[in-house]
Length: 538
Picture (cartoon, rainbow, N blue to C red):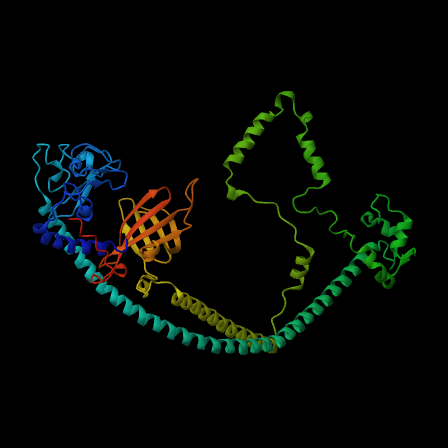
């Protein structure tokens, strides 16, 4: 692939040589190339080229196949496996199957294959040679200009590599400074956070102590209210009988609150005054229900009396037979109401708050920090911000170092001539898709008129033949095809003055081929390794 342009340049040289050799063509049997002239000597017997037998020379081209390999009939159609050599003076020599000799169709541009068919063939070799010469001249010019660009690319890559190495050294030095700065700021941060933590803990403890006092005061106030509620006869004592009036205090909740059970709650005595009630308060306060709230149902519930009244109102016995509502009609009405009610009209039942939430609301929010504590918090936050900023800068520097090291060590060709493609992207728009090639990164395809992008492969490796590995790129592990393999793309590089994607195709399902021209692939036209074809085939 890499030598294609050089071969074409060589062919241009060949055409010039052919033009000079036309007047000096060596005589040999019809259909024999110059390279095999030595095997066909008229004054000696002919030995088949496969060595199978020897025959008199007059049996060469006698229109009868004597040799198994067909070498005795290079100029006739006698042997099915023979080959006829077209001299094609003025153009390029060629071989055709012997079966096409004198078949009435002009295969050789010099008409030598139809010497005895009677068909009127025109010798077009000079015209073909002229056109090819012009085309090869253009290609040779492109190769020459492309190679000049390539030399510039190599120089730029060389300078770019030196710049990157210099930049890498500078960044590595700055990394050391940043690492030291980060460690110093870490110490400052930790030093500032310790008094901050202690001040916050003191503030929180003071708030917890304050809440405990508030809860205790509320508990004592509630205890006093409960004592007054239980002391029905206002004698300054709460007796067993008075305690039994609150069935919710029954320890085993068996609906039988006995005198003995009440006595146990009172500490084993028959009655207690306010001082003694404080010692037994913990035994009853969790279950006790205040008389002032006992008859108030929770939100969303009805009392037994209301339930009874509602049942009575709906009792069918209150209706005459003919006035009993039909259940089907009610159901239909309910269905219609449900259909008419929007989702936004739905209101969930109220939810009760937890005890902790109630306590927080009753006790209020934690008071703001005092000035001394807030100063410590601000100082610690400033230290954290400075530390985080320095640590972020260090991470960014480490990323830069990794990227530079990767780019410096990357295989951009023997002289880094492909380095200019790094971080660039090139597009080709077809009738249906926009193809995008980002060398050394990925290949993608996106519908021209909208739609998501499809990954046709990420950079894999250089994939040209062993003697020209930089003539192709392989991109692998793209988006998977439906019930098929992951997509992949082979990018073939050809010499050109411009860097451009010239074509795309899908030779096999999920395997794409992309043609890409670049000056970086161009070779020196004057190089001895230019791939000249054998010009002896005249």
